[in-house]
Image 1 (spheres, rainbow, N blue to C red):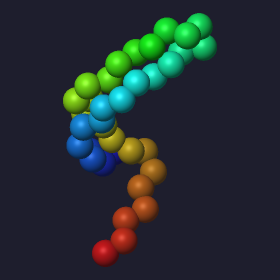
Image 2 (cartoon, rainbow, N blue to C red; image 1 turned 180 degrees about the vertical axis):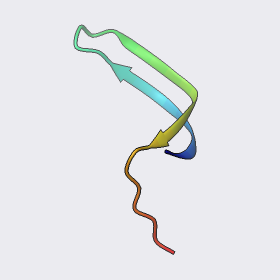
Image 3 (cartoon, rainbow, N blue to C red; image 1 turned 90 degrees about the vertical axis):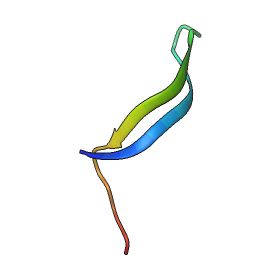
Image 4 (tube, rainbow, N blue to C red; image 1 turned 180 degrees about the horizontal axis):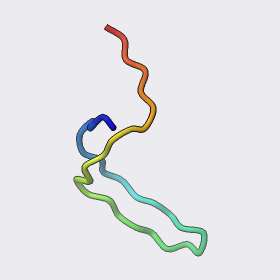
Amino acid sequence: HQVFGRMNGKVILDDGTVLKIKNLLCFAEDVHNRY
């Protein structure tokens, strides 16, 4: 895993419920870096 920082936004579930995301520490499973 490679930590990228924090994520903000929202997730809308199938039943219409909205989950607000604030400062969630996030990472990525598959990364393609360029230098």
